[in-house]
Length: 217
Image (cartoon, rainbow, N blue to C red; front, side, top):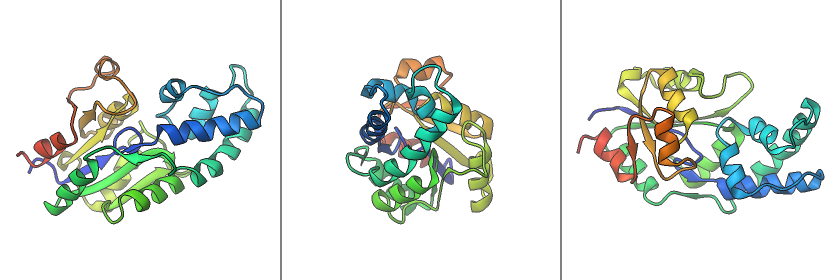
């Protein structure tokens, strides 16, 4: 076994959340008189947390007050509508189950609001994650290493025994900043070309490859 802990990103890595993110965003944008955004625009906006999503979605020149107000409306709306079209990527649940069966600890670290992270883990992956951490005001968001460091501390793991699994430039930087090896998945919200241009060292195309790497099959 190469690693004893697998730390997963959520959006674009274990869950395809894009439609629910976009649908919720457009409801709130329309309610406030702003132009709606396409699915591809929303795809490019996500990765740095909900506040940054709102900032990117609003028209250029929007004030901090406007951004904060729309953010305040979006968070509860999205949390109530986060599991309508959202689904696990094919094969990922079986991969996590197999890791657990082989004694590998599993965690989620996401820039999504912590309440939504906890709810989605409970709904789609009940009992499969040893720790789940989302965005909270008392901890720095990814790509800062704080969330990963907290997971390592909670689980009593050394970073050299852990691998970080994600799909975006934020995830590549998170792994680097956390001093952890990376696995970057190609099925998420970013293209392989984008990932390579942002320094991805190891890209996989199928969830089963996670087992090949971690369990050294």
